[in-house]
Structures are given as C-alpha cells and as structure tokens.
Length: 313
Image 1 (cartoon, one colour):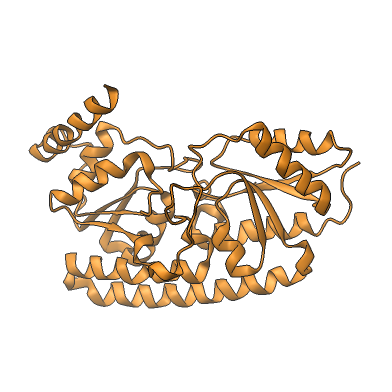
Image 2 (tube, helix red, strand yellow):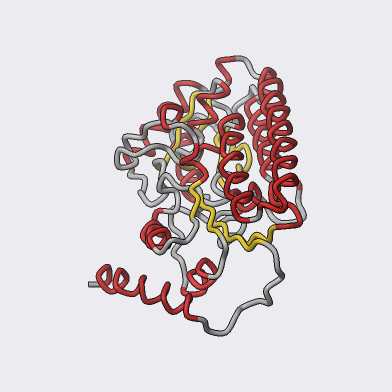
C-alpha cells in the first residue's frame, strides 16, 4: 500500500512543482542545474564555470543508495534547466522520480551511463546490473565529461567556447591525476594491494589500479551483511595477513568494526586504516571537497595504511 501511495504521489509532486508555488531561492540567472550527488555536482560545476548554478541534493556523507527525494527536492528538480545524476541505479530510491522527470521532457542526464557499456563492470550481487561506482577509475570518469559539455552547450550555446575549454582542461587534469595514482601505488608491492572496505564500491579502482577488492556489504548498501559474510571475510583477512581495513564516510562504521572484532577473535590484529570517501565527496572547504581531492585523499590513506607491515597485537 505504501508503495502504491508513493507511486501515485510522484506525478502530483512533479505537476505541483511545475505549476508554481513559492520559490525557495531567487533566480540568479544563467543555466540552473540540479545534481543528485556532490560528486556529479562537482563535475558539472567544474565544466559549467560561472555560467552555471549547480545545486546538489546530497551533501557530504550521504549514501545515494538509500537517499529518498523530498517534496522540496522534486520542486528544485522541476524548476531546473537540467538534472544531472550518476545513473546505473546508484540513486536507487530516486529512480522512479528521475524516470518520471525524463518522461515529462525535462532534460535529465545520467553521466555514468555515458561510459560505454562494454567498459562497465557487471555485478551479480546488484540485481544483475552494472556496478555504478565508475568514478573510482579516474580515466573512466573522464569519459563522462563529453556528456556534460554536450548538454550545457545545447542549453547555452552562447557560452559554448567556455564550456569546451574548461572540459578540455579538466580532462587533461584527470589524465595527470590518473598518472599520479598509478605512480603512488607503486609504493605497494603487488601482494600488498588488497583493499577491504565497508561496501563493494571499489571494483573499478581495483580493476584500473591492480587491487584485489573485498567489500563487506554488496555494491548497494541497501543490503545487510550477515554473520556468515563477516566470518568469511575475517578468515580471508587472517589468511592473507592484511594489516588494515577501511571504513567509509557514507557507511556506518559498525560494519567494519564488527569485522575487526571477528578478526581479533581469531588471534590476529587488523587496524582500521582510515576513512575512505566512497559515495560522497568531503566537506566544503577541505581538500577532499572536489573529486580530484577525494581521489588523492583516498589513495594516500590506502597506501599509507597498507604499507604498515606489522599487524596489531
């Protein structure tokens, strides 16, 4: 019944927002964009520059897998010139609203779906769909830039030159960043490149940069980890003598803490090597507030922790 009510309300919310109501902010002029995650917002903001106003629905530390759009979110999306989102079902609980927005001829862009399907990772544990966390491969994330440029130029052809120039500069920056990641992980021997995290978000990172990746939860955090999952992963950590495992900023730490305790009960000590940015960027004003900043922060955290050769007693 709740699902039926929610489904019935979606067209009403969209229609109500389109018909007006009190605006939540003064129209600043220019192109108005709404993005779902702050990762997508950073991408659009970087390319859009001063001609584009970007509002992110999800702030730092928000889990997009579980995020539910409010009536205010629907109003913001309805009044935007374009909606940018990750897609590939990352925003699982928003999928129906985003689909309805597209059906109403609103300009919606799923940036991750601009990546060629052949380059996506299939995820059997995610309802047979593809893994949506494409941004963990910097070179792959760079391929989303063209979709953003195409949309902004179509919306605002008078500023096409600026969009194209910023896009080219950003792709060059990401190429340099990708090279830096590859160079930085050379500090780790191949057998040290094992990444254990709260949920299975780092598949693209592992494929691109040569890491074996294990996540306690699945690709979507909507699934819970069972006792057998914890015990199986604990055995893996002990067997491989992995020195560090990692929590994530958008996933409660209790999952990894339970895993650490399960490892300890087997007579082996594993450290929590730090907190990784997975489905969200860092706080505004910090180096991790941008996509390149989060990549650098994550890689430094991973390399530093895994270089530790002594497991905790």
